[in-house]
Structures are given as C-alpha cells and as structure tokens.
Image (cartoon, rainbow, N blue to C red; front, side, top):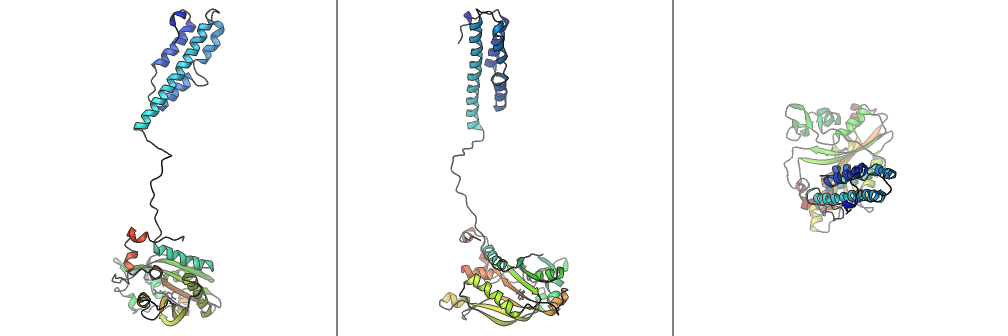
Amino acid sequence: MLNPSRVPMSSPLFENVRKIIAEVEASAPKDAEELEVFRIRFLGTKNIVKPLFAEMRNVESTDRKAYGLLLNEAKTIAESTYKKFETELQAIQHTTGPDYDLTAPAFPAKLGSRHPISIVMNQIIQIFQRIGFDVVENREIEDEWHNFTALNTPEDHPARDMTDTYYLKYDLTRMLRSQTSTVQVHEMENRQPPIRIISPGRVYRNETVSARAHCQFHQVEGLYVDENVSFADMKQVLYYFAQQLYGDDVKIRLRPSFFPFTEPSAEVDVYWGLNSDADYRMTKGTGWLEILGCGMVDPNVLQMCGIDPDRYTGFAFGMGIERQAMRKYKIEDIRMLFENDVRFLKQFTAAF
Ligand code: DAH
C-alpha cells in the first residue's frame, strides 16, 4: 500500500487516480456479466487508467515518481480485485449453478436392440435388393378393390367375411388390409412393367390370439412383371432367397397350392431336418417347413390392374415375417413378439 502522507493531495491529477481506486474498491460485480463490465472499464484495452499515464508529463517533476507509483497502484488494485471477484463467482457457480464435470465418466447407457421382426425383415429386404427389387410401401386401411376384387377374390370368398377381416365400423367398404398383396395392385395400377418390387408391412386378420396366431402380423410381398417372366425365373429367385436366408446348402421344394390371384400357385418349403423333438414339432413330423406362398400372376389380375396379359407375365410371392423370426430364433410363442418385454427383446443383437 502506498503511504498517503507521501502523496501530494493537492494535484487534481492525483485526485483522478484516487477516485478510480475508490471506485475499484467500491465495486461489487454480482455475476459474470457485471464482472466483464468491470474488466472492460479498469483492465480492458481502453480502460480508464490508461489515459492517466499520458498525463505524466503534466506532473511536477518532483511528484512524478509518486504519480507513477499511484497509477501502478490503481492498476494492481484493479487486477487483484478482478481476480478476487472471479474466484468468488466461480465458487458460487460451483455450489449453486449447473455443475458440468466433463471429465466424469458417463452413466452406463442402456443401448436398445433391434426387434427380432425388424432384424428378419431387414435381412429379407437386403436379400431382394441385391437382385434388383425395389422396396415400396402402401396404406394399411384399404378398400375392397385392392384387398380382394382386383386380386381375383370372389364375392363369396370366406376371407371377405367379417369373421376373417376387420372392416371399419363406420365405413364397411374399408378394412385393415389382410395381406400385403394389396401393394401389387397399387403398383400395377400406377405403372407399366418392368415392375420388380418387394413390399414389407403390417397386416390384420380377425384371428383368436394364440401361441401360433395373432390378429396383427407382418408380411413381405414380392412382385416381378415383365415380358417373358417364367415360372422357372420365380423358382430361381426363391431358391436364391432361401440360400441367402437359410444357407447355401438349403434344400427347397415347391408344392402345388391355390391362391385366387396366381395361376399356377405353389407353396415353398425348406428342408429343416428331423433330428430332435423340436424339429419334429416345428415341421409337424415332415422335416419340411413352409416358408411362403407364390405363383404366376393370374392374367385376370394383370388385366384388372391395367397391364396387358398378352404381352406381360409375372410372378408374385408373399411370406409372413413372424414365422421366419420364430424359426430363426426358436421362439415358441408368437405373442412374445408383441409384448415388448425388455428381458425378451434384449437377447436379439444383430448388425442389421
Ligand atoms: N397373400 C398371401 C397370404 O396372405 C400370400 C401370397 C401367396 C402372396 C401367393 C402372393 C402369392 O403374392 O403369389 O397368405
């Protein structure tokens, strides 16, 4: 501290410095913003002490040293006061304000995992994308035309019954789609061949929920229409698919079947084996598992959708995703796929 007795009190220049010192000592910035105002006023590049150094030449030579000392004193007081407030404010912030310790380890984050249905669905999508099928989606609330009529389903077909299909309460011409085959109709109505698509999505049926059936499930539909598309093409595409999903050495067989929208129609089985009790249960004692329905698109369907059946042919197929997932992961009750029990779901990890 400067000894005031040595400082000539009379000079107004000295008085100016003393006023600044008094102001510094009386300041009490309450927050970071006020502290910054303080810093700019007393320590910034245009601080109010600076110009007083230039007054040195107007001070009597005998008093110059004292003047210089007083100015330095002002500067030092401003600096130490600033530091003091800065530390105090930091301490306050530490106890009351947000306290972010960026070096602290993060909480162990619980990573979610993909749902088994998504895993299998993505796998199927990728297999068909590799051979040039595009993914398209369409609506879940349908009209009779897209869900039944354009798919060649007769008026008196049992699937049209309310005991099989969910109709909307206030509009009995609309329903929750019962199959993704509806997307075939939308696609063919909207564009001309070549058409090569798959369509994943949810479907709804008025089923009693049990270990093997659910009123809501997922399907993937496929459609390929062009000139000269043959049954042999279909067989080869589905064989490729089965190899990709079940392994290169997979064995498949096609069994004749019936669907209103394909002629001829078939069901595809893959050979599963018959070694354990589980194999026996899964394959109903045959060793074979049915994986999908398929067939050549009925010329009637092409016609109804605006495609010339004399010029174009096509094949279509459809499969349930839950079935594939249950097989793949040996899930014995379909309801587990819809209960969202984390203990069940966290068992599935996949890069897909
Ligand atoms: N829509 C049929 C079902 O729900 C599955 C199906 C069978 C789709 C044959 C097709 C097909 O496109 O050609 O069971």
